[in-house]
Image 1 (cartoon, rainbow, N blue to C red):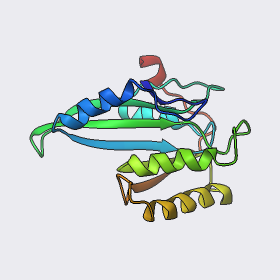
Image 2 (tube, rainbow, N blue to C red; image 1 turned 60 degrees about the vertical axis):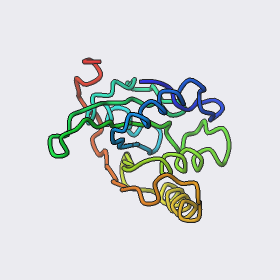
Image 3 (cartoon, rainbow, N blue to C red; image 1 turned 90 degrees about the vertical axis):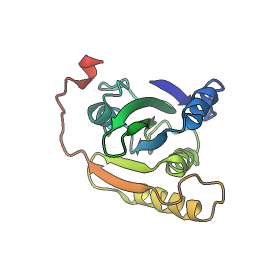
Length: 171
């Protein structure tokens, strides 16, 4: 995994653009799958389980900014190589939020660049989380520079108090 957006300043890291340009210019399909959700909801663990991404994941550890990992696979249906760009985002609704717009900016970026957005939540969607997603979805509809106008949004409810997984140990 590589840090895509610095968690302290919410700015792109300069060396990332070359890697993304290489993927884009390869002529191979690129599917972007992102995860958002509250702090400590299990977002990194979910992406590790689904994709073998090896994002750092442990009790008490929180992602800062947005990290990415790229996977190549052969699609037997289309009979060609494809890429999946997996984005793991910092938790929103955290007590340490740096400013009032932080959550909206993280969610906005993720929804603008993703084909699939997974919302990983600890329990039911609360009103604040619902409001953030609605606000950003409305903003995307009115933005001309959006890469993905209609991302598929899936809500994952992590109802388990403890998840025992060997995924983090395999990394």
